[in-house]
Length: 197
Image 1 (tube, rainbow, N blue to C red):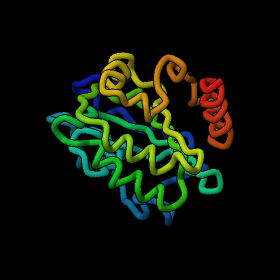
Image 2 (image 1 turned 30 degrees about the vertical axis):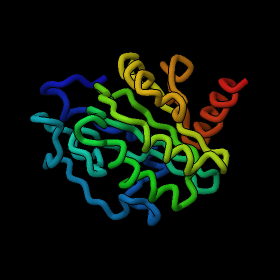
Image 3 (image 1 turned 90 degrees about the vertical axis):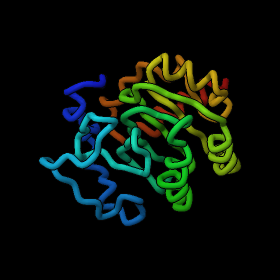
């Protein structure tokens, strides 16, 4: 897991699903034709450089990598990195407008957010989360926060985000990297349905 410090630039997005999906090759992706460098660091979180494979969606402290999209199933997996700061930077607005809305426009209704490298959460109001939920709920859509750190989840729950995002102990310590993306959708749906029972 990431910590603030000199090692931040060494933390890469998960890359073992690249044989199945690359957002830069997906004509429907907001990151289509994005070019990356292995040597030039262009993004940072505060004064810490981060690995150039992370994608910017408009936030100055939170970055992402779309790991998998299945348009037939309306399903996406998004890994996040950095500090999620709604209080100062309105990161949820940036995320919603810059990434989520273009994906919803292409039929995505089920979102898994992987938060192992989200270091902190600073909340504000829940309006954009409610808007996101309202955009997808009529199509059996859902949002899952997987493997977020306990103190991050606690802060999110303090701001009532669990009304719109499936989160908590049921979605922690999931060994998702061992699963091929084609089966990950089934695993995620099973987790949602078991929690609803």
